[in-house]
Amino acid sequence: MKLNRRTLNIALASATLSSLLPATAFAQKKPVLGFAQVGAESEWRTANTESIKSAAKEAGIELKFSDAQQKQENQIKAIRSYIAQKVDVIAFSPVVESGWDTVLLEAKAAKIPVVLTDRSVNTKDDSLYVTFMGSDFVEEGRKAGRWLVEKEKGNAGPINIVELQGTVGSAPAIDRKKGFEEIIKADPKFKIIRSQTGDFTRAKGKEVMEAFLKAEGKKINVLYAHNDDMAIGAIQAIEEAGMKPAQDIIIISIDAVKGAFEAMMAGKLNVSVECSPLLGPQLMAAVADIKAGKPLPKRILTKEGIFPMEVAKAEFPNRKY
Image (tube, rainbow, N blue to C red; front, side):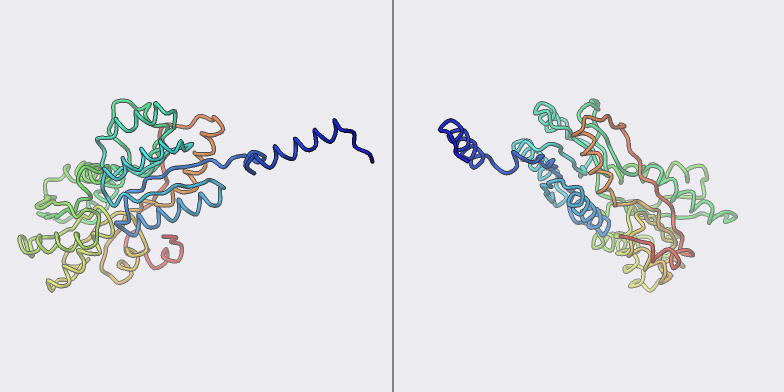
């Protein structure tokens, strides 16, 4: 077939244009999510990070990921970097509750929607984020308190409790303390005699528990730890002090990671309240909805249970983290 000059010129122009355009111009652009993680302070956080990374890959979402190493200034720096890169959505798990308004206002000004995962922020302007997805930390504290009240029914007391708090100023530390105290304050036999941060880490949990044991010794009846990693560190301190964890001292913790189930199966931890880290699929669904212009509820709760020592062996094969 003969090509006239006009047809040939059009064909050549089209070929030149297509060679200049990137391949993405002919395909739908992947949504880009910037995620600022707290750090890698615990088994829970490691599982949370893995859930987010694998869910992004599965959903076809480009993930820009940063680890703040438990420092707020690192998270703020990461969020500003995502704003500069003009990502589609920013998500993060805030190290602490307060001090976010300035950077969130910057994201809002750049018209980049923000999703809070696992932990919330303390702000008077809730238009600064689209939704908060994660656990009800106050309810987790209540579950821990209810379990203890039920276990000690009929015991005249006093019941002396030491508390390993999470990172100072963080939402789970504030709320898990609040929920627990809300339940035990109804009965004066329950007394928190020592309370200090273990920063959600195993090493710090061990260190603080050693100090509690030196100060209070056999007066301690119960340990309430805001996460499993601190509880596992404390178990080591209790054993090194020549005492039997879960027998001489009742141990209650939160998260229900595999390490806690192993401790329960070994008879060293009494109960763990679940806090699921598997938020990845939920987060990617939210990113897709935001991109599609669909409205999201302001609060998305995760469903969770409570696991006493007696069910640990049967439940262990079902654990994904």
